[in-house]
Amino acid sequence: MSRLEEKYKKELVKKLQTDLGIKNVMSVPRMTKIVLNMGVKDAIADKKNMEKAAETLALITGQKPKVMKAKKSISTFKLREGDEIGLVATLRGERMYDFYDKLVSIVFPRLRDFHGVRRNSFDGHGNYTLGFVESAVFPEIDPGKVDKIQGLEISIVTTAKSNKEGEALLEALGMPFAKGENR
Image (tube, rainbow, N blue to C red; front, side):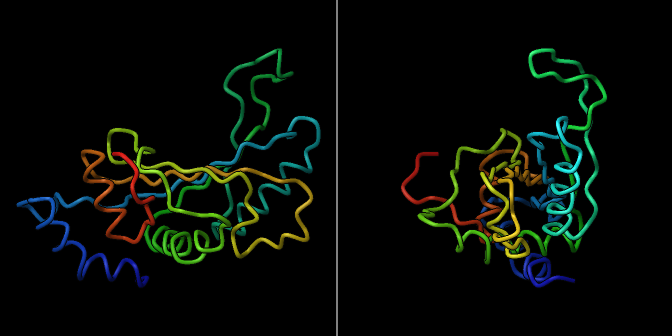
């Protein structure tokens, strides 16, 4: 069991239960999965770009990503249905907690001019999504070996019923929200 998961089960469940006024312990919000999504820019032009991006995402997550294909053809983008255009990796259990811990304690402090993440990136159901312009901010990635800057989107899926509950959960788990921002 990871350090963060242990902290959540031993300390944070009781704290969240009292803070949110929840009677049943099983109704306390928790993380269910973290989904990392990467759209590969020139995947159609050169298949090597897809392989490099897959390697990068595998280093970041610790597991092999799934290749996503285009659902429909778009002629203006020279895209055909079935073309490989992106990668996705879903983290659950211990890997999910380890990744979240790494994100909060290592990745965010490494960012230049970082003042916290926005509070208004919740989807209305307590799930949170944030994006990175480049994946080189992760400690596993060697910036010297990166030839193409690749973006990355992270969605944290929770069992929270509202944005308020989701925000309380992520804040308890150490998410550095921006101070002085409207809710």
